[in-house]
Length: 274
Image (cartoon, rainbow, N blue to C red):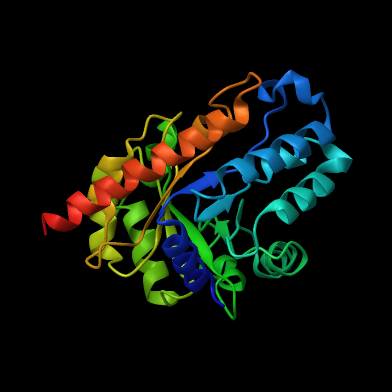
């Protein structure tokens, strides 16, 4: 089953279009769980258990695992094992390197860790994306990211258009929709609207909902495709750390459910208006 097929099935079964980021921050993990790598594993397993009814995808960011040093891959591996088999996993690695190195990165993410999709940085060139966008793999190419400094480079004008638009147009021409979508920050809805016109049939992973200030309803209205889909809003801190007390599991479940319901309402309203 391809990533998009798996995502669609998980979305239908949970009536959800939201992704939950699994990013362990040691200082924010409830102290009752202890400290160190195993505290992260315990915490993430419980978060997955609490939210899996409401999320149609999970997105572990590798940086938050690598900070555990030698234990990083153990924490990541045990976390991935806790995710239900029918929910797709996006490994947020933002890889981008020369072709032979990109091939090694892609093999690690898809073959060793069994990711369903991975995020990829495009600025080395299209040949850096190619190993992530073939066979049963799926690349989510960074287009317009959610951080405040996104425009420092991405907004540079190239032949009359912003660089991020050039990147999306080039990737659309090079890679089919079944193997390539885009990362488009929920914090930049106007840019998302412009990119939807350039990539009408692509999935947009939309991080930045919640702690980064992105509004899920605004993002969905801007980026929804003609079929009423094509968007995957993603939240991490606002779900994982909804509480740092003993009720953290319930708080995470409540936050995930509220985000799912808000996303569904926004999607329904946007579809009705068309």
